[in-house]
Image (tube, rainbow, N blue to C red):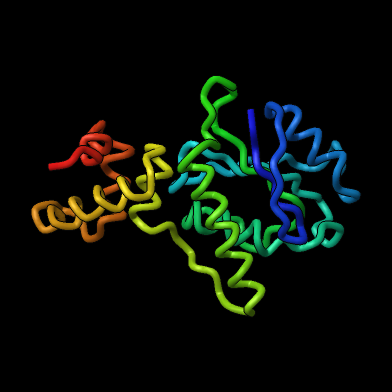
Length: 189
């Protein structure tokens, strides 16, 4: 399977391999990484088909800061982002089945655009945003194009007053996690 790597300098590159190979890459590509260090996974709430993987050294001062990787994890997982993240981070599909190319098409485009946006914001000494927009959440959840996701988001906004939810993002999470109705909103009215 294909996965994306954000180095501590903020550079993004693509690699291929399974979970084990991604972990081996993290261990061998970083001087501070050791086989006794924690291997961390972050389940990304707003990008459910993706996981973040990194090596968490016992002595955090050994690992360089990775503000781009940390900001991306914060955007994809607002309640659980690790904050002061250090070292290389891998964004890898949540399934080990190579027949399910999660990092392909609209989902890959979303990951690349978030990386570009975060890198640009940090280069300009700005503060990156902290959440995916509702239409981006739809793309992350369903793999639909950005245009289809925006159209679905507009339909959800029109129906929001008829629901118990305060925001379209909350409604998208509900439809994604607790029902099977999110794909229905991708169909034109």
